[in-house]
Length: 367
Length: 108
Ligand SMILES: Cc1cc2nc3c(=O)[nH]c(=O)nc-3n(C[C@H](O)[C@H](O)[C@H](O)COP(=O)(O)OP(=O)(O)OC[C@H]3O[C@@H](n4cnc5c(N)ncnc54)[C@H](O)[C@@H]3O)c2cc1C
Image 1: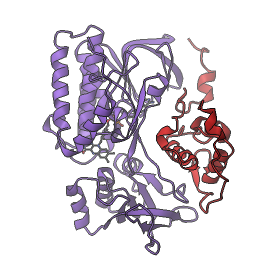
Image 2: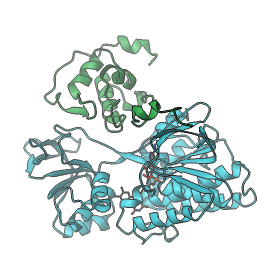
Image 3: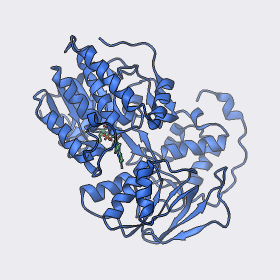
Image 4: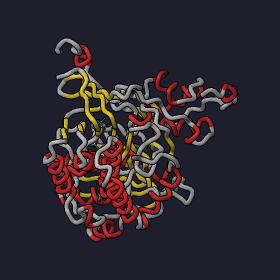
């Protein structure tokens, strides 16, 4: 193997955004290398056993892992795409060289264009004993159950009533695990009400304006104390409840995984609607570092549907900037942009749109 | 950083809190009390806290605690978390075995 691997487009992250970017760019003729930290590409989709919401164009109605398999197949069928699994990007340097660890080697890649599609990481909250065994992020619980077939315990306290908290609770119930309660600090349930009512009908309480004050247990979690919050989010004294649980599952949001963008010196901005610091980019997802694009949750936490379309848009734009498909790229870009607006037309999308408005870089056309 | 004046603004005495022994950085096992004390000792940025205590420099490279530490700095200094500058992201951003680096260049 040569010391430095040359490629036209390097994609970091093989989730829905990265895989969609890979096949879009490769279809226009660019050669693409995808780095994926996991043993199998697919990102979050690998562990999603539920049927997806969203638009038919983005495979709504199919189960998440099936969508993942489809994207893997599309890349697999394209000779221009190379996917390195079990390979983690470690850094990006001033000259544009990206380093990674894979195949027990320190790898160096010199790409002409880079698409960062690293997704997001789970947020943590602080409470006493939050380091006890038995306290998991919701993503970890899903991986345990849906990828490895292992239930995390017998009785769970779920923290967070957004879609992730609701869906993972339901999946735990399907696996025969009891949910003691779902608590949510906000006064309203954040996730879709169809999911919430399905859970409530099964007898699981969803307690809004509630938080956890501590976990307890010797070797591992034995229970949790929860309490009510008043209008100014302060604990109401005397409202404490003791729940005997052996698992506490945190579904309190995601933060974009933007270290590479920071390292690449992209201009970054904190946008709460997009869940954290995200790189400033133009309409075609190119950041302020020329030739570096972003797509998916790393550019603002959203959904797999929009991650796939953003990936496609970034892939087309990167390929086009290398001279591939210049004749059809504008049409394909316009199509992707129209799909994104369609996806963001709903109430949940309004938040993302506000966030993007906040962020948008004015200049910078492609091609 | 850079705003020397900020360093001279008194932020009050360190007052112990009942949950000071709560672990904030799980990888390096750094507690809330240690971080609050460091802020009162003059570490006003994420980078300084990292270098001083190693909070955020362990296995997960701050994915778990950075947001929490940032909130604590903001609270102790009485500013918005947005005013706390983000921590520098450096390579390697994920752990890598020394042997992998050590073997570099040994094979062609
Ligand atoms: C419980 C749950 C339910 C959901 N339900 C829906 C739904 O019904 N409909 C919907 O549209 N969306 C849904 N989503 C959201 C959707 O899964 C995400 O928005 C989507 O996966 C984001 O895609 P992505 O490609 O940006 O990131 P990810 O899917 O997170 O993929 C990122 C990939 O990058 C890899 N990676 C990260 N860092 C590195 C590195 N340094 N080197 C190499 N590889 C790296 C990761 O291993 C990962 O494979 C759900 C999410 C969850 C958690």
